[in-house]
Length: 535
Image 1 (cartoon, helix red, strand yellow):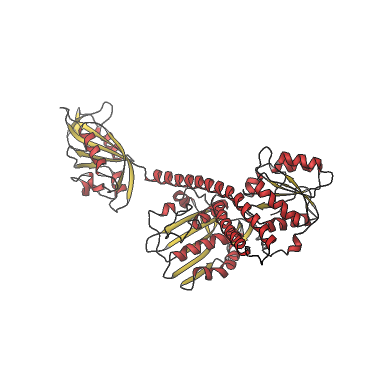
Image 2 (tube, helix red, strand yellow):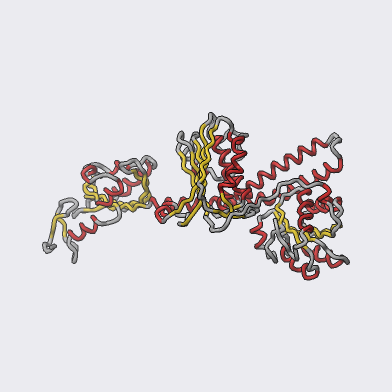
């Protein structure tokens, strides 16, 4: 085989010289079995040959495309200037390289790295063009997924940082408003004004909490949960959220596995998804919330490369609403991105959902088509532990329960935050030592002749962190308890050299009454020793 000096070219039928040491039949087999798409055209661009890889990817049979031009693959997603450059380049006898979007026979788009090489005959004229296309659709999809994840992380860092700085401002506003409210009494003509200030501060606090959730900096109180139990609690409020014209269906897997989550955050997640579904059904419809166990195998992971294989509990929220336009889908989890009319949405609902899911180690996917409704699928890793039934207390504290006689050391580098906190705690009967920062707190503690029952300290401060300060002062006051406060989450707190896991933790912004209640809770915990923690 391959002993003649010249043989017929299997692609064009023309006579060609055999390559030294390799027959044309071998070359033909190589092209036929090549994984890339090979297309050979004549000088006018009419197709004379396509390899099996072309048929497999495009869906066109060889007999359908012979004699036609590669325009049959034109997607319409690239401008005419791209094709003008292509023909200008190859007609000049040069090699053309580019990334192009083509279309299969089915109408589905695919992306290729294209190389077109002119083939010259013996006289130097262009006789054929060889196009070599490598399908990079999957690579581009993975790159887009990674880019979106990186973008969301970057936005989350920005949002979390802004929320942290804003928290201190809210502390100042709400603290002085609380002091004013207590000073003027309910009969004063300015009392209503103060209530409006406090109400606005609470609304702003809710916004910053949503930003912190998106930035994954919200404080978490993780518990092993049965998601069905949380859903039963939330369902009592859902009817009021979605309205009477929306049919609510809840489908729970009776053998649902356990997850480790913050129950308050889960409620927040479900309520936000339900509110989003309600807004997508202005004329009514059906909202379905379901739970079930799923096991994601390698086939699924191949499609959703960010999700590791394993056992999950899935929360599915589906609506029969308007659906989401394709151009909006990549942006729906971005903070402040909204398609609603001005004044009808903050653009933080789905951003909050995304942050909660990611902070909890889960994954979320959205499926939607215009006019066909939307489905959100949230996957939480399963845990093999027994569910806890404890829930944080929401009971109000009586004013007398806030009072005490102990000695407190309050350390906060923001004067506008520290002053009202110290004033309120003194009004509650405490003896309060102020520390402008960690170093000043050390000086004040050394000048103090008596004992210190509790140190309340910010975590992130210049010079020395709250954790380092606690470690230093506990050597002198081994029975002193410590309450950490921060605009950052507990995870960030742990990274700032806290000498023991901080369960005595108060997330900013908080009200002065919440601070006093937490102080009383920590001091009343007679079992706590050293840097006890609880939150």
